[in-house]
Length: 407
Image 1 (spheres, one colour):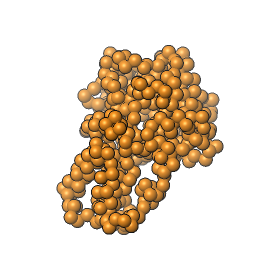
Image 2 (cartoon, rainbow, N blue to C red):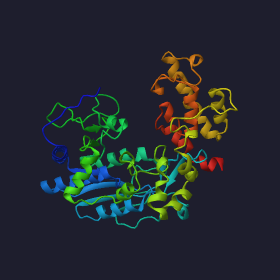
Image 3 (cartoon, rainbow, N blue to C red):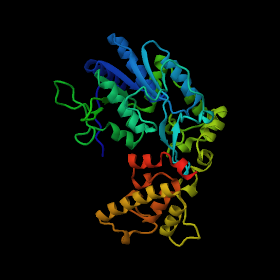
Image 4 (tube, helix red, strand yellow):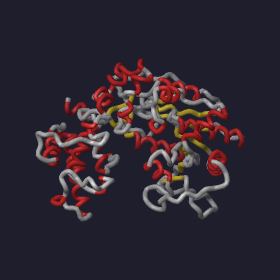
């Protein structure tokens, strides 16, 4: 069980108080802005507190991933046109996950030489940064997960800077863990000068200067829209289109379209912005396949699938799927499966004891290894996320140019 501590103030007043603390202890405040509902509310709150304290402008970082909705870009222009916002509109070649193709497992936003394939032209705005030499830390096709902390450290190098991130803990377990207080590891909760109590809604890297705050971590979905409506704030009109299209609230998110989770929403481009649809599915290999099949049972979704009749075991099926992959991708999966096997062996579950199809009685199948679980991960083409693997620099760099290698 997770303990929840309730306080007398409402979430709006609590968020304002948190942002005031950031302005008090830092010379500059920067909001991580995606154009989505959470980051928009965070930016509005920061601007509100800045006016109250007579400070500003508020910096805002938007990393443009090219394959984005027109409504999102319209909202970004609207917010970045304000005089009290100091915008950073990043349009650099960034390496991104493509879960829709084994031939091109990673793609590059704003890739030089492929301008005719871009989903949309390079935006024309004074805040746009497209020069690869602008940032001293930037490396061609660096990962999104690398760029953000590098930018934060670069900005905090000369002026103390607080970074406000619009993450809400009730959206998912991973987001809850992102704001959970840490006492050890790569990131820890920040402690204000003169205090001995870490701020639970903060995060800092002990090796660097950047400090991040999550001022709306305890907000609910309804809190966001009540705040927007009662204050008449600008918001991304894409949410209106999503609502009319019947998109569940839990799936109303703004992100790059080709990722492991995001590809399940690729078909939304067809429904919400038909003019953008053709460019999106033409931009990245396998995108049309992802839009059509990523929710289907035969790819391991919606309750999974049965073993094909041509195979006698899930282990045999897994070996077949591995052999069907391009060599570079196959080696990444093999390496990760080997790590998966060793981990379970060290935890009392050697390979010889694996149930081929798993034990149905276990509600959470992550509690057990099985060849069915391995095969499902291979079918999903999720870079072994189903086997509890996450981002790994070694693998993403190895596959960044795999499209050229297998062509």
